[in-house]
Length: 167
Image (cartoon, rainbow, N blue to C red; front, top):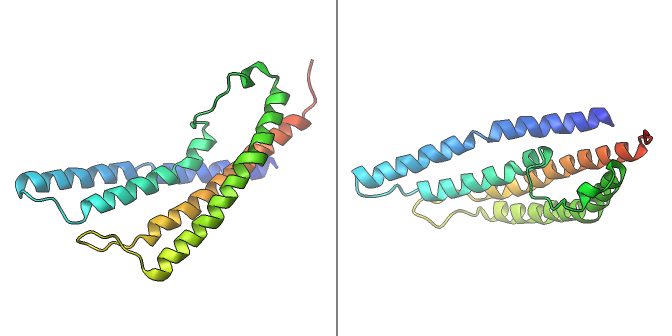
């Protein structure tokens, strides 16, 4: 189980580090669009749609990286008062009852959402028709990465519950 959790952590770590620089690309596109407005008096036809889609993809694809690093908001006022074993039990229950079913639903519905967009050849409504289905595929990738990271969290919680209590 340790090898599996380490592999999942490594995958999400590498993926997060690969996606993080996308913010620099978004920034460069925004600067380009501002320069076009300033020097030519007209924004580009594509920059707004592209930055919106890239930011959405960046936000979604960094979710599993955030979960791996405990960067998401967590209300742990009461949790801190519990022993490590009870914290692990609470985490295990929370993930199995709430998180994993939600991510399963996101994966299933996201796949349908992507397929519908892909089959219709959906594009943006702007001056330049940019395909939308790659961004909708990000929902599926995000759900899969989050599900994997949730499995790593659940695995660690199970390991903590199996660990003998030391006096």
